[in-house]
Length: 273
Image 1: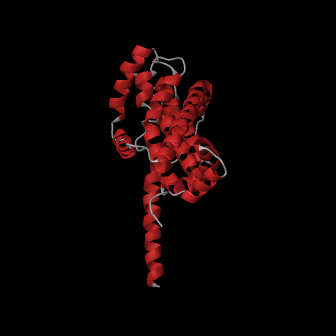
Image 2: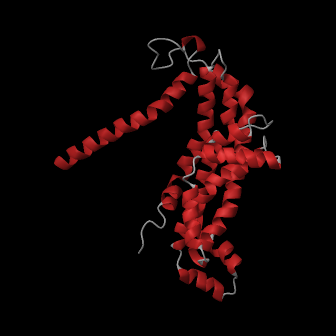
Image 3: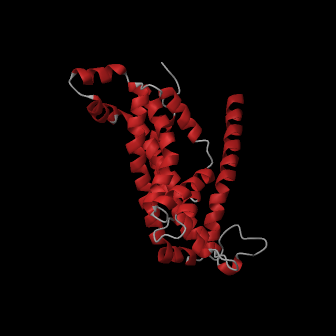
């Protein structure tokens, strides 16, 4: 009985904490359905008593190009991150190059640099190279956040791959690249999904790099598209929140579909047999 009572208390506490964490998401959905004239109502309605879909109509009319650009930048960031991080992780985990420890420390330090500091540095570099206001410039910038994380995840995961498996492939005549491509990558599915997911989410939700490096481009991501509804004397809050709801759907779907792979990927290398 005591055990059941304790479990019930823990469950109740968990439900309360979950409700508190999800309340901003619910409020975002509530405001997205609230008519503009009811935005300043005091007290506000906890439920959309007179729902309107004007905000979602505005999203379909105005925001689809921005969503497409965000999707393009996200997929490009994933591709570039995997292209760089997977071979680097394999090298650090199995090939043990000279200076690998210093490189790992450097990647860890790189993740501690604030994004705004990196954005200002990129602005000067992109200005000289003519990469400002371009979607592929944002892919490069967003990848600098994702690559260090990806290298560490791949290194931790690939360190747990049995050496006998790699040795067997070499006995069969496979070289270093063939071993990496045909043996190591197929068994690193969890790490691949984890790195891909976080790379996409970072690029999808990026605002600092987008606002600094692509404020005047023709192809701008959704984080800048929301600014269309914000002015000095007018804020279309239902359209803003509707855009936020729509922009959250791809991230939520990806998290749900990939959660079991992410759980295995982020804990790889945490323990040793």
